[in-house]
Image 1 (tube, rainbow, N blue to C red):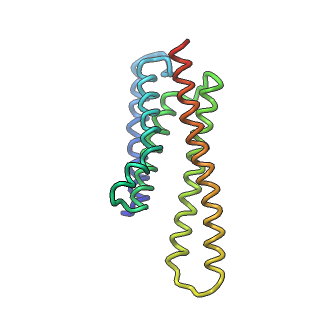
Image 2 (image 1 turned 90 degrees about the horizontal axis):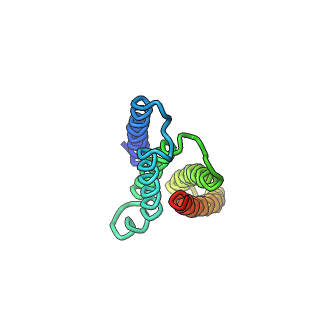
Image 3 (image 1 turned 90 degrees about the vertical axis):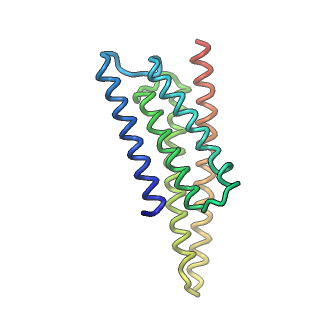
Length: 175
């Protein structure tokens, strides 16, 4: 099993566990789960911590001899589980503007990360081709430029997510 498939399997399995826990909490109480309940706050806190770990995952993995494929797989797993936790925390109810901005930054980070991963796979496929025509270097350069733009959007979305999440947490603690 390749690393991207393994990371997808781990993310889906973790999502099913989190969704099962969410359904169990909803089944146990008549009140819908939200960020105001203790369970919702725990899910939000875990999602925020995992978002921080996801943002720093490349830094601590760079010190070790991991391959880029393994780094990307762990980054995808951590980001996917953080997504599941934050969705369970919010219950798709965006109570205030800051929470909505954080959620849209989260979605932007996920979408841009998936598109950047698509271009990574395209680039690795083009690099493995040993064609002497001018089409492959030109296409590879084009894909590299597109990948850089999506990675820039991914980093901007992740920065926005963490910034809005901190503002959201501070506003919840203040009010």
